[in-house]
Length: 298
Image 1 (tube, rainbow, N blue to C red):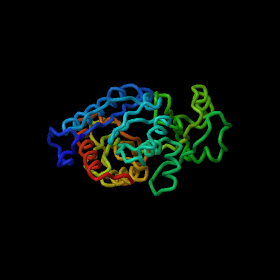
Image 2 (cartoon, rainbow, N blue to C red):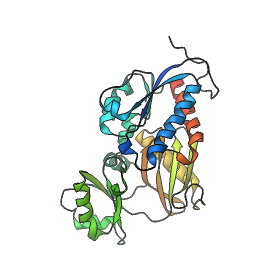
Image 3 (cartoon, helix red, strand yellow):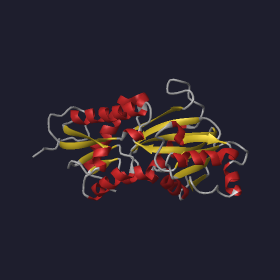
Image 4 (cartoon, rainbow, N blue to C red):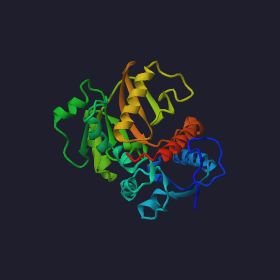
């Protein structure tokens, strides 16, 4: 029988075998362009940290999970974003296994769910309308509310995050109908029509208990100069949103129409953490170790 290490919250190497963990790698369809390599790399780095503590890793894919092939284990590292895999994983939440991120929280990041969850909260979020891509245009008043100053309107696929660049487009009100037809033609049934928020956009990354948080300006990139914004308010908004959605490992985008007024644009489960992968992997593994030790299932 596998034995448990004496100090599960330690980052030091252990020669004690803790048992199996299952690392579920995201489907390539949910990792567009360079994210495919980076998503794999952050999972690999996190698994390596946990293997150093004595865990025995079993690596599998989102497709395997969708097809009902899921090894039994006390710990699952979950990067799945699709609904089919989430349905297969959902029973684990009540069966005593530790799952990070929980499938329910990953589903909460699907835009049609995200809009509703945040609409019921106090999180600053742009006006957003979930709309069937094949349906007639929304009433003119609703469209104008998304573009009060005649700025462009964002149109994003209504379920998972972008699989390809054309899944998120900005267009004028006059071109909304054409854009919707393009989504329909690609088999995307629901879209999110979203108000544009002016100001600099920043990308943030975090782990739920606060042991890791980092951010950078979207335009300048990680190595560039950060925009002059209120970091404390950014952090508070990021962690509040993650808590509402049940996310433990997360990242997203925030716009600052004013330096002290962050507005959430997007959030997703287990991003790639590419600019600071090793530091993030250490923090994620340490958090998971803590979670296993305390067996939180809420």
